[in-house]
Image (cartoon, rainbow, N blue to C red; front, side):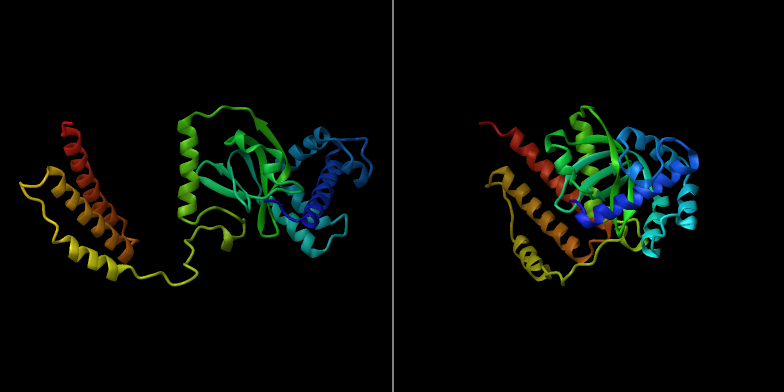
Amino acid sequence: MKISEQDAKLFFDLMWALQFFVNQKLKILTNVKSLDDYAECSAEEKFEVRKALYGDTKLIASFVQENPENFSEEKLSIVSDWKNFIEGGFHIERFLKRYAVFIKDADVYGVMGLYQGFDELVDRSQLPLYVQTVLLPFKGKIVYDGFFQVYNVHFGGGIKRGLRESYMTAKQNSRIIESFEPTQKGTQKKKPSKPLINWMPELNELAGKAKKLRGSSEHPAIYGLAFSLVKASIEFAQIAVSDSDDLAHLCKSLRKVERALSKSNTVLNREEY
């Protein structure tokens, strides 16, 4: 869940050059005379320059226009894209193989580490974790800017479940934001990579067999309700595989399943043992 070492080096070469430029413009660290000097500054010193950078995005445009380090157009394009940064508080909800999952309000981001993966910086037992940081686009991916402030906040079960649901909903609907590039933001559902199996013949066959299921007064009360649940479930599956985009139809069918299940529960609860 981190970019390559080569890309991490490129990221910091660009970031330190940009921040050094900001420092030269605003005279924040007056004892820094060169880019090498700035690279050796402490995190606390750089943090002050960082605040000034994100406080005025015009500084990014000025850097690109003046190009004080004679960067190539490709490198300048990377820096220019940083004007689209997202700053604020995020919940790190989980670690995946490719990236860490960051959640901010209704948005879910797949964020990659730099020289270290987030699982090297944070123990999984600490998740979910609330952090303050800045997300940046970088070569078609999302990274953080190298700084994040951790808040030792304990989250109850309700918040944890809410964050998990935010992730699961974004995953199910293919809207985890993995890039700031418009065509890659995951706002559209991905098409299956291969044709889906057509289960309708099997479901129709099951539905035909289920029609023969009948309860009677001679049978325990649960028989008829269990059969109703089977029929409702098969009908729900038929609708799901034939028209899964019709949410109203699906929900109506699911309610029928829920009613059959509720009645089955009622009968079981009445049973005397």
